[in-house]
Each structure stands twice: as C-alpha cells, then as structure tokens.
Image (tube, rainbow, N blue to C red; front, top):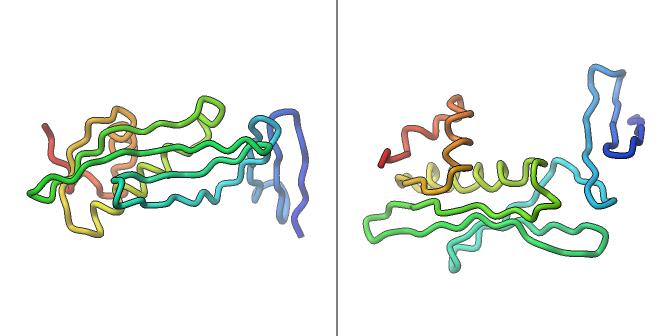
Length: 133
C-alpha cells in the first residue's frame, strides 16, 4: 500500500519505507506523474505531449524533418514554461531518438536540448545514429 505526503511543491509517494519513495512534482496546482504519453505525429513530423494543468491544456512539441536520403533532422523542442524542468523534454527526446534507432535512420541534431540529452545518456547508445555536423 502506498502512502502520499504533500508539500507545497511536491507530492511524495512511499511504498515499503523511505528507500522506495517517488517524488511526484506539482505544477500550477496539478499533480505531474512520471508516466508521460508521447504521441508521434508522422504526417506533421513531430512528437507531442498533451499537458493538462487544472483544465488549461497545452502541448510540448519536438519537431523534426526527414530528408530524401532518410536522414532525420531533430530541429527543436518546445515545452511550456510552466512545465519546464519536469522531464517533459527528456521524454520527447527519448521518443524521437528511439524512432531513429527503430527505423535504422541517422540523425542530425539542431536542437541544443536533444544534443545535451544524447551527451548525458551515453549508456542509451544513441551516438551511433548521430551524424556529427
């Protein structure tokens, strides 16, 4: 059984003592859980996350293009200011990079955040799919 403790900025979820705690962030008064649903919108060449915060719905977006030689350019990530620093961009970056790997494509990175994500997560093996230009 899980126990929840609320603070002004966070909710903590405890299962079997403090060693198995999970911090659940709050933003704009809403609870922000770690299970984010990323949607791949292939026709519009973007990945999106719908963010609902107290009835105000907004989206975080990662934009990309695919060239005729099947190279993906990861252009930008845009996250509403109220949701920045909560891992939303990381979920978008992971989904886009997983797409590159699954489709056996190469990627060119134009977005500083995606470059940072790849550099900070070498254990995920995305470097092998990145063209350094």
